[in-house]
Image (tube, rainbow, N blue to C red):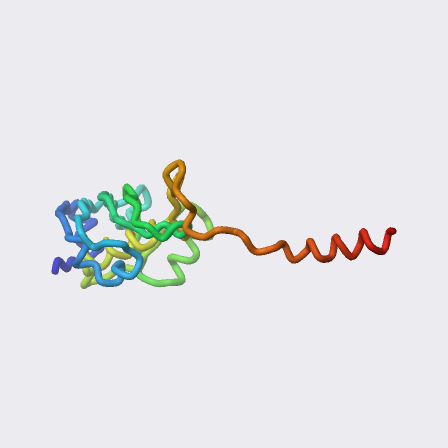
Length: 164
């Protein structure tokens, strides 16, 4: 487990990178078809023009998600880059975010768990409902057939009977 003081790391221009097995990301596991593979990441620190500490994080890899249409596994490419500007208090972070809607804020953390930060960014990047471009191969039966009668068809028949 890698732990840093987030503001000191940023002010010193720290740089870390590495690889995390997908299986080590426990909060992510229920979103996946398979927990194989790994996530590559890089974290660097700096200060912005206002001398605020910030963390630049890039995360990439391939995850096996579950298609919400056909429920089959699907490969999904992960490629996230984010800059997190740090603030000592929630009030200062909220005030800065009001002035700049594009600003992503976090609180300064004297014991920032880097793998937890990376897992959080991966979770935020996941699509709400992952879908294949095309689920079934041509000629395959769809997973669920839509053979139920349209409930409004009965109303249409009633309407045409009244008109007669």
